[in-house]
Length: 277
Image (cartoon, rainbow, N blue to C red; front, side, top):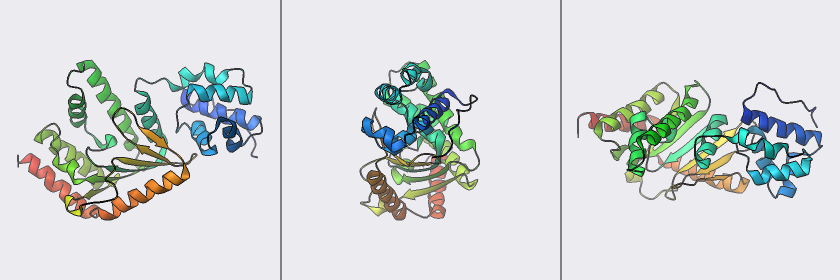
């Protein structure tokens, strides 16, 4: 086993919490799998808690305190480590995105969140809840734009999106909003910041018909599958499931147009919105 070190006190609360977990586990002489066994979770699950890719839940914090004999440390400091203004499933997705080395996403209906413009996001949120308070909508728009900040790094994460043609054709927010949204995607792709492919209607049946899919890999944790649904998302780290969904994504990507042909289609759709066609 490698030599243990105390966590760097300059880390964020969430990162410091995970680093402290790694330190206490190593001090106890346990591997990730050995800590996870009495909790009925995998070693990779523990690794994700330590790296911050997965948010700690109270039941796990209490079990860890008992196993590692840390006198309630992890339960006491849970609120500080996981505080977020976002709903639980949204906060977990945002934290995973911020730590990801690669993000591969299939979007069947909407532009992926990390690629959305302010106007497009506002239109999506307002459609989902027409009577929501304006202040709440604006707070959620700001949170979405903050998440998109991960793409400000010129290289990491590698972001590869496959967009169903429906994403281009559904006029979310109207023609002007869609023209701006598609122009934003084109800019990111042309600047080599993202890779985009379009899965055309002409392809017919394909492997991604079950719905939206996101796969994320991390430097210090196993890969995660993120399945998005109304109000509650699933995060899967079981190797068998990760392999299955990786194959699904590969099949969708293989059925899509090439990146070059895809950008041509995106540009054509953007032009159509600009001209009101």
